[in-house]
Image 1 (cartoon, rainbow, N blue to C red):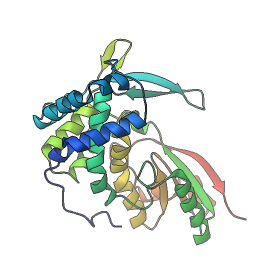
Image 2 (cartoon, helix red, strand yellow):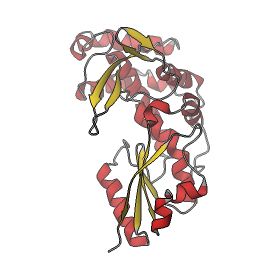
Image 3 (spheres, rainbow, N blue to C red):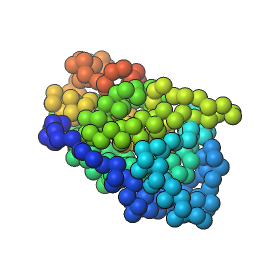
Image 4 (cartoon, rainbow, N blue to C red):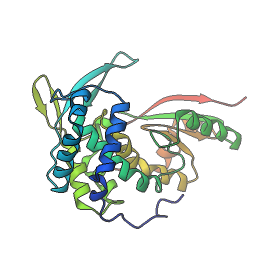
Length: 275
């Protein structure tokens, strides 16, 4: 589907976010997903004990355009290469609002996303992405280039993230809410750290915002005749020859890539698939 096939922006949307059944649905999803407490130390059980009051407070703040997210609680998890991945654990109430926002935004973005994007999308999976890559091998590609956008979740421009949302949504209250979540920062060792870039991993909004940010690249690749299958910040593109693969493939030759500022790319694996 062409990127400009749905040029009309979505108008008023915030009322659908704070609609009480939507907040209640969001809470159900947050509860099913389990998770731990944020900087306010409120557990899922404590939130549920006063569920109606909590949801009404969220609704009132969103209606008044006065919702202020808390910073995420910084935690680290080990990565296979020995390094650590930083997560920002949102407060329960922030996870509910993020999820309520995602529920109302997702459908409008899905209509615009490229068919080669598979990460954290409804009805799509990593297995389908692999199947797409394998199917490409029957269309003349002998080399597969696997690319990782290094530190994407830490370095993606807030300006570009908001611009990606603004391309789809005209409601200024939605844009302010997304901006508030991006700028909420993290709490680490008792100190709040403001984030000037990135979309923290751990946020219910991060996958949607990341896909929106990289959607232009996905469509650029398709427009140039290159099927670059992407799962979050990882992608694989087929190319017909070893020299092109070793030079970084089609994206490097054409000068296309993620929106500025350019995220560094690391070409992790180049493998021949020829029999």
